[in-house]
Structure formats: C-alpha cells, structure tokens
Image (tube, rainbow, N blue to C red; front, side):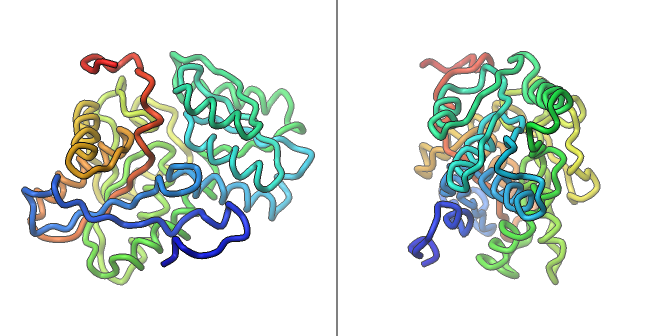
Length: 308
C-alpha cells in the first residue's frame, strides 16, 4: 500500500521498502523465517539513499549546507548516487571523491545528475578517497559542505528513524535476530540501536569481510581500515567474519534460486543470516539487501573465476 502513495517529490520515495521472505536458500532451516529488506527499491537503488538524504536534510535545517556551498563527500558509489539524485531534486551542487576504479555505471549515473567527480588513487580504495576529501576541505573550507558519511551522526540516525522502525512495523515481536554488514557502519549502528530499544531482546549481528584484502565492495575490514567515527564495536551483540567467496556465491544463489539480483555485500549479509539461522534452529532473522547487482557488471581485479 505504501509503495502506491502519491508523492510531491522524489525525496518522498525514500524508505518504506518491502520485506521479502527467502524461501529456497533457507530450505535447510524451515523453522527459521529469514527476511530480506529490499533497500534497492529506493530511488537511488540502494540503502544509502536513507543516510544521504538525512545528512542533507539535517545540514540544510541547521545552515551547514547552503546554496553557495558544494556538498562534498568520499564514496565508493552508492552514497554518491543518492547525493546526486537528491542534490538535483533539492537544488544543491554535489562533488564526489571516488576511487578511479569504481564501476563505470556508478560514474555515469552520478554524472547524469550534474555531479562533479574527483578521482582518487584506485589502490587506496575508500580510505584513499576519504583522505583526498579531507585534503580538499582543508584547502578550501568555505567552498564545500563536507557531508562526511563516516563521521556524520545523521548517517546512523537515518536508520534509527527509518530502517529500524520499519522492520519493527513489518515483523514486530516476531523478530529475534538482525544481521547487517559494516561499511560506513551506519545501517548496522542505527538499526541496531533502534532494535535494542524494543521491548523484547533482539540479537544484532555485524558482518564484516574476513580478510583485509577482500572483494566485498562497500564493506570494511575494520582492523585494517580507517575506522568510521560513527562505529561503536560494542553495540552489536556479535561480530561475524564472512569471506569474499561466500558473499559472491550467495549473491549468485539469490539470483538463481530466488530471482533476486543483488550486490556482493548483500550476498555476505544473507550468508551471515543463514549462518545464524542454522545455529538458532527456530526464530526470525532480518537482513538487508543493500543494492542491485547491475552495478557490479564491470569486472574488478579480484574476479578470478568469473568469465565475462
């Protein structure tokens, strides 16, 4: 019902995403309901629509973002797409620092909305983009509003006010476990806080790559990365490492068995959710579909056994 509502602006379409029960990949755990929240149904195609819009709205409200400043942030793609859409819709200029090796699709999408792209060293990944963005801010602080998704409390706040509330509305007291991957950590931190505020205990699991050198784009191996200031390692009830191959293989299974084409971070989330389901035997697990798989068609360095 909520998806058929009338809207006055594209920003009104953010949130109220569907919750889909997985049936085939969960065949070995029939007494555990596993749900996937389809965040790729947001206008920008990812979970990052929520924090990008919240960051902008909060900064506009308190005067940090004005028409004479350019919103600047470091991103591997999805947050940048969201900034670009809502910058265009709300009338604000956007500049993004991206590793030069992010997929061409993400570059093309952001530039379609008039966004300026500033390439960073591809070998330094998202951390290199963060460092370059901070250098630009130091050089010209009056030119930019630094959205800083890795430090900005509006990032987890978007999920506290939105994602967590929606999950409770959709499954209520049925939910026993929540699983979310760590990138900026905003989804995990904000949703976990909201679920921990619920009247019943909900066990929240943080998923992260098992290795420093990994192929789960958008996710962070915290021990070897610049740790986001919004990240609180004590907040999740459990931390679960997931290997690159496990995330990739699960993404393939979701496409082939469930008809859901998603990115590899979603594959890692679902792999983690199924590991939880196997362990608990009975319950209800909710996890996040971060984005669609079509943004990963361009092969990357780690794609060894795939033919294109």
